[in-house]
Image (cartoon, rainbow, N blue to C red; front, side, top):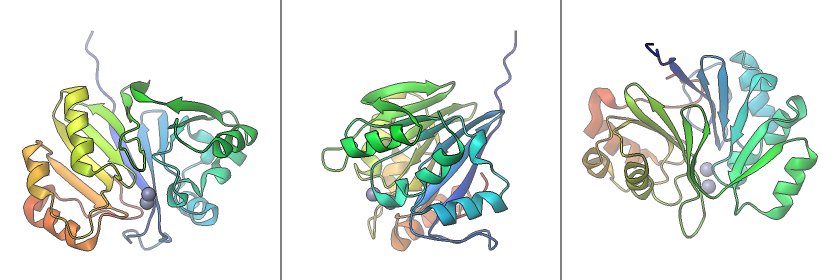
Amino acid sequence: MLEVKKKVTITIIYDNNPCDNRLRTAWGFSCLIEKGEEKVLFDTGGDTATLIENMGILKKEPESIDLIVLSHPHADHTGGLSAILRQNKGVKLYLGASFPESFKVWAKEEGADVIEVYKAEEIYKDFYTTGELGRGIKEQSLVMKTERGLIVITGCAHPGIVSILQEVRREFNEKIYLVLGGFHLGEVDVSKDLRRLGVERVAPCHCTGNKAIAFLEREYGNDFIRNGVGRVI
Ligand SMILES: [Zn+2]
Ligand SMILES: [Zn+2]
């Protein structure tokens, strides 16, 4: 039987870059990935008020989320979590094993079904984690398999965006269609490295850095996606 893959929609619900004027910007990152009925929240932004207000305007319901993936423990990615947990008891929460013990205990008390991530694995149909990468600040990225290739979503990319993508190529052995999220580059130009890795499209936001974004825009042209809060991809 022919399997028709469902369309993937990614909505940026929290970011420090503006896009949809109805939404509030604040330092941090969160996006909602919808694939048919499946809803995955990646990171939760820096505060509950902005996250909930933006979700309300976008008509996204905290209680409809199936699972949450937290890239790393920094407050600009975990600050909105309590608002989701309040309205969604028992939600699956994938976080790196290196998260502070106190955070894990707190999340369990708030009703989350905490699952600790060590290495690359499938966490949901066609959704994968890279596992925790990096030697300093450990971080996991989210990988989705789609008809067009892999979609990779990063939080801050502290292990290095190029290292993360090299690891994704090695682990999944498929072409990378899109990379989206914070790349944490400042003024570093990685556009040629991303080309070399076969990345087809880029949608940098959050902590990427204006200079680095400009380099990517110049290299990628029509395959560069201007990213910010409210962007739907
Ligand atoms: Zn960070
Ligand atoms: Zn960040």
